[in-house]
Length: 461
Image (cartoon, rainbow, N blue to C red; front, side):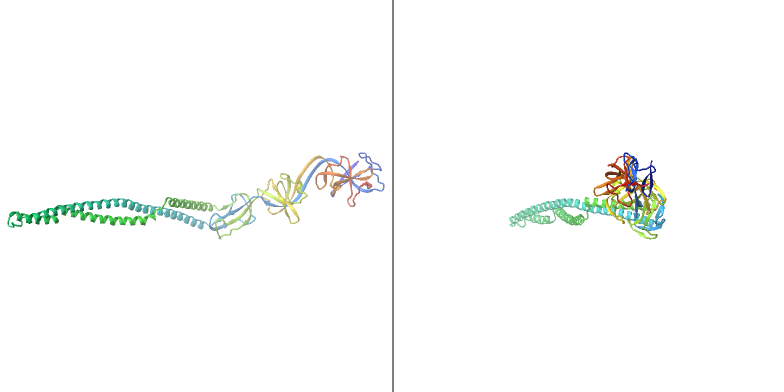
């Protein structure tokens, strides 16, 4: 009967009925001048491959809180390392400072609106004066043209009237000369009276006086019209530059809307700030940058909160173990003497210096982390890289490797025979043999001395 005893990663096969020739699958072991060896009969069974790693407990989700406003910090309600629940108050702003900021925002909004309205109203008044001048100039130009034409007509009529009277007076003078031989005649006397009357009428005849007065009035009107035209011309020239274009109105309107949006956002931020900075999830406060009574600016970092709902173990794996590790493999981990389960969630695609040598980063996500976890602690994790059943297996100690490949020594008629094998998964104790051995093969090895091909061997009892 063959028994297997396992200790210190060694498996020793002991037979209480071994004699000079024990038939095991047709193989005999001779004890004559043979070296004592450990032995194991290759069998089929289950085999699990586990990679043990040490890592650091970290949060996979963190949030950096920044200030949305320029304000004074009122109170910091937490300390670094504190565990907080979702909704807990972390930091409060100074209430008086917030009230002042709200008042200033409202006053700024009113001032911005007043400035916009003032600009638009001023532009409207300027545009009104410009349009008034433009319209009046069009009318004035017509009135001036009409008045000048009327003056010309009146002057012509006046000249014609005077010329007619002057012509009549000239004829009277001719007639008077013709009657000059009879100075005492009534005819001569009448002619003299008519000449005097004609001379008076040339200056003061009602129609001439009326036309002269009309002409004087038209000239005065023309002067007034030209003076008003000059005034309107000046008004038009002085207001044309102050008229707001469509593009300028659109720009002012856009500025107004942008200011309204900015002020509205500020007021909403101030309203939110009154509620204080609160935790978005359960976690650990790992860093506080704000101090009570200090002034913070918009965008200033206040604190860092790391989640305890998304906890990972970050470890480094050597180049030999990484070949067996894949995403999704199950893991058992021990943190602060408490066991957790998880899965391999990330494998880095680069090597880096881990402090103890070059390694590849691996992240393990815990299934059900709890609030007893302390971030930054060391964790021990076992990654189950494979779990097989009914595989041919032998002790890992029986396996040797050189540049030609993996090999074992098999006991055959009391001698060790070297056989190359193809290996599968392995753990600290056993290794899967995929090719090169059959079930029942008796593999042998020594801890202190190397076995050579053809060497005589005997199994340790």
